Image (cartoon, rainbow, N blue to C red):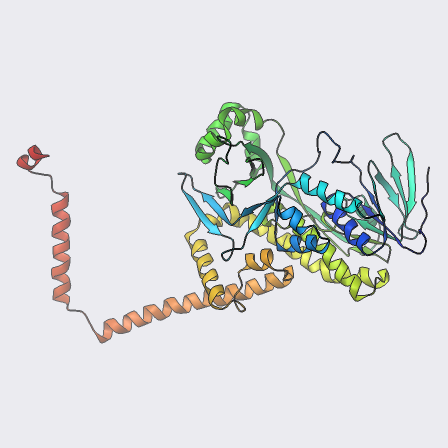
Length: 480
């Protein structure tokens, strides 16, 4: 058993538990401030691992995440390894493709590889001389009073270390958060949605992308959907989201092909029938959980960030972005309170909890939008109306997706504004429709049409239709 120093000189020690995306980025933020930073990760170093374990759903990097990366000088490097997605590309059952832009011209999100991003952030954290990365360290217990943590090692031994601040970035099933659950007045809920996901790969065709790469491709089928995001190696990662009972109905390779022929016929030649038969059964469908809790801190000793605080389902593309924004919000509050943890931590909970709960709810809503609403003509019409009004009144009407994805408007403020705008626009459309009906009626009353003319015109149209339907004469038939 080893024990590290509580302080190194006059510098406070920050222990970041979890070396995933948010943990690695957080290490950069704290190291940049001059703290002694130690990162503790349960897994081995993924930069050396032959197989990277964990989730592999592609990530969509947008404004919030980019701002956090920019703060530690990583934005350009990560953006250079991403692929622009300018719009959703909707695939109908008949194979028709319809683009729905995300925002104004020039606005886009980025498809980035989770494992590569994690590796880059770990390497960036390691460049700070005041940062130490500790892999194969599984948190067993920790004290909210002293900051003493106990870690288990692969050989069965234990290591203890002490920190001034413990930052829990260890995911939806956080070991750090377990200590919170033992305390009174800590609210916690988790919800598994009835849908699972399965990943499939669409290989390149003749060395190029099998589909147009600068889109997030969606096959919406009302109760389920498939999406595809482009990768740098010219493949697409396809993710099928569907109720678990539907996954379980498919038990043979023939049934897989039959299912895809019925719902995703244009995807079969692109993925490959043999690959579908094989890959569908490679792994069972994975579950998705949404986690909410509050507060995010205990005293001045511990704070939760990322999925440990607010795991969200992946349908708004904001899970990583919200986690990265946690880092920058905490950093801004650190500036405001001169790095006084006793003031910073409660303020962080006060500010961040309503926003993270809002994006968790939005992510649930967006699943319905992606798999069902995008098929609706009314939805597409409203998108055009919203974008037009935003163009005419950019400061008054801002589409929800624009606020969430292309600005740092607080999530809960974006939701409140969205509800207000929706009400105003719907009332405006209703009044416009009523006004048009009243105006048309007034014109008809003021200038009534000649009934005799209408009758004659109607008779002419009818006679033409009858002539078209009449069978051709023998003479005419012989000339065809």
